[in-house]
Amino acid sequence: MKKILLYILLFLLVTIVASFILGYSKFGFTVGFIFILVAIGAANIFQMKNTEYLHHKLHDSNVRRNKR
Image (cartoon, rainbow, N blue to C red; front, side, top):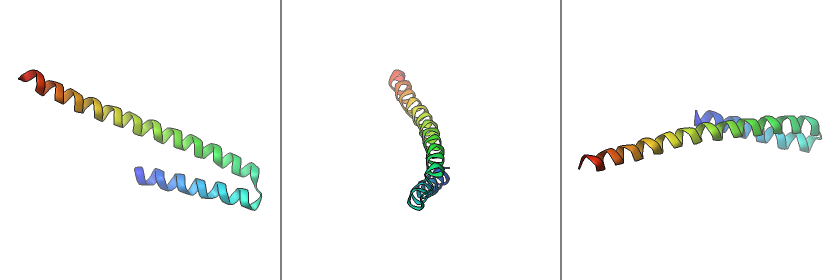
């Protein structure tokens, strides 16, 4: 999933740059907006996974500590 999102973001970024170079600024702004939405969505997804991972890691550590 990480690689797919990375490829999508790279494709959108290249499309934004190319559209501004070719003079299609409205299209570039639209694709830029889509780029921002995808980037924020991906950041939120991976932030939630990281929070869950850290919670489980700390919880396991506390359980082991309390068993002693």
